[in-house]
Length: 219
Image (tube, rainbow, N blue to C red; front, side, top):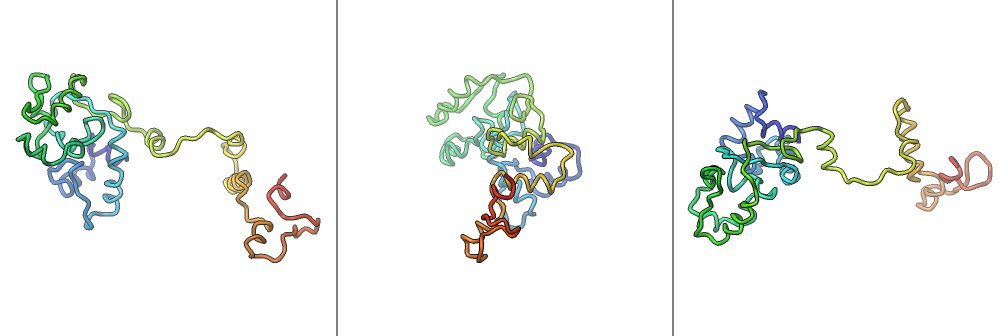
């Protein structure tokens, strides 16, 4: 996700410059098609496009580079996915046109003869055209952070009661992992191995006469 953000913000780096010259070749990032010849990194980047589009917040003035049809500036979706190729053709606007073509004197100016675009125009009427063009991460003017990127990809669940017992600074990683397995009852104890037919006996090897289980070993 950070690499995608670097491309959007035109970060001064050799990698971004190379990608724009050799990979994008004048295309919008959203127009690039998946090809077998792309590197593993770029194949992974393209798989992330949908999830990134849902996070970005566009502030629109009169951008001459954002693609009208392909950038997800409208409700986090590319217009061509919502209206299709036929509507684009009927609009009379080229496929490579930019947002500036439908903004005149800081007002929206959509082709009036295409009925499907009237719904888009009505939805855009509530969108104010700002003082400057910008792409924000999760909010207007928001900057990228790895924490926000991680939170956007993971499934948020409530903190378990034993979380601070297992995960704390200064602990030994091997011990943390072992304790984490314990709370999830994920150790391959003899009672489990016996049910799977891997061992002949489920008794504790210490000779106490009880079944070897997580509760027996740790609690």
